[in-house]
Image: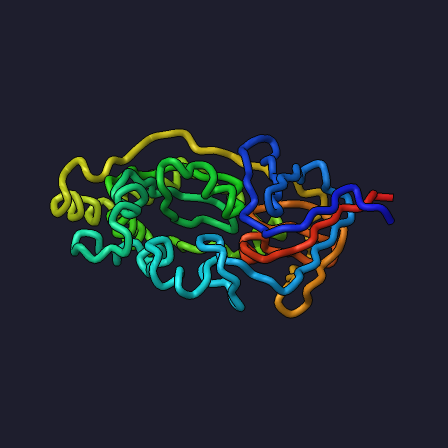
Length: 280
């Protein structure tokens, strides 16, 4: 069968734009392919066994931190432990792996937000990453709660909130469309009351203007999904280098196929052949 799309190259995280529904593109090498219009079509990934670091292009047997080789994983600030645990930021100690990167990515305004992806969760992101971060998590609603002056401070606020709410998405529930209805304006009000003493202590330590509660509007998001899976099975390109099926939807960084789901971000740096076939 002749493919409608047949491209080879390295996978990267899927670009997405807010809309009704969210608009997705898949990037294979230098080729960008609109995906929403492919829902309902059979597609196939064939991994050729080659993984290349998205930073230095070195061939690597294993991908670290979603797309890096081990040397880059060890040296880049983007792969440091404080990225996953921002409260551990050590920029102020003069030990940041890449101080200039830290200045542009960490020592800038961050947003602490509430989102509904598989239930209520708290999260943080750079101001410039709203709403991209929410889309990547598959949130159906999200709302800013406070704006803070640094990533580390956002981590401290998140820790305070985690006493009352989760900080992770149940990705299987998210992919089933199993999401409760929540009033995030009310949840924000409630959370700010619960952490009021924590915020006061942080302001006393970091400056009165370091944390600013906001009453900004939230954002509702919908996704191009025709069929929600009843059970969630995953395709693993490391164990089975070919994955194929009819594309039934896209949510977060996942493609939902009738044969299972595939997390595109997980396979950043993987060399693949990607094909889309006629849907008849």
